[in-house]
Length: 210
Length: 204
Image 1: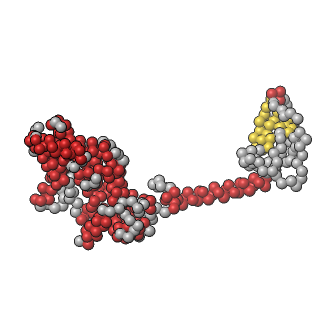
Image 2: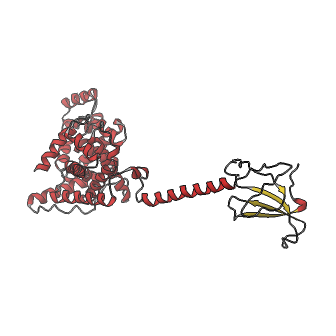
Image 3: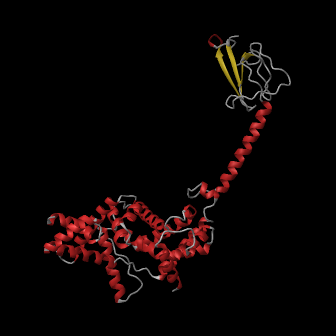
């Protein structure tokens, strides 16, 4: 091992960070090289110099203030991380308003679904028929399909459960704004107060085949 | 002082990995996890010196060390429920301290550097005796010496040389390999020696 190689390894040798083989090689070189031996001693002294100055001067007041501020922050933040805090680790999250909002959503969803189930009918295909009244959807067949009275409404996929489509010709006397040649397409949504009305030129309207 | 005696006793317990809960430290942690405020206070009391000293060595500033120590204990408080009693509490605490100091450096806009060489040294300790003044001066010199290092070199040499942790433990705390840690420590020691040589007027 030459001096250049030894000088590169001396920082690790000074802190006992060399593996056995290389440590022995360095030690052997140091026995025969005064310059490297002096360099090794300088590295050791540098390490001692560093450690001698590494003790910070923190007094009791510093630590008392530290403990007090920790207690203050904990008191400000509330109890240790409980169930809700573990669910929402983000700082500033407040569980109570979110819980209230979640409960309102659940209740609202239950009410909406119960109302939906009461007004749910088997999905009639589009028919040329009178527009159903806003508060109810009549059983209108399409293509000869009948809805037996007393039959429980069939559950539909949620996305389409609320739609019935009625294609009808707009009676001029009832819808003065519609052109006689326009076809009126009405879609009744699950919300009885919302109905979508399309006016389509009759010659371009899509008609259902029987 | 009773607090220091308790700290020494619990630090001795820290030297061996946490066992099933028979050591005083393990019992203290269990009580703190159960929500006992007094137990957590005692936990802070037992580890405050080590945490503050490590933070100061990593950050180079008394005020930043205080902020970092506060954040370390707040994180301990928040995550004590996640602490696995089978793992070493000291190692867990060191890891939090290193992460907090790194986050603090990045937050204050010094991601890769430590305190500036031109920065004002920390205000002297309340001890206004000659010994206190000498100590303050030595700490300023140390801060400047460590400021010549990169963030990774500083973390490696603080944990290896000043905290006395083995290379394997340092690598685990820093999320690195032993070879990388040795390389960083080697570079750091060379820079510290160079700084000291210049300070003492020795040019090589």
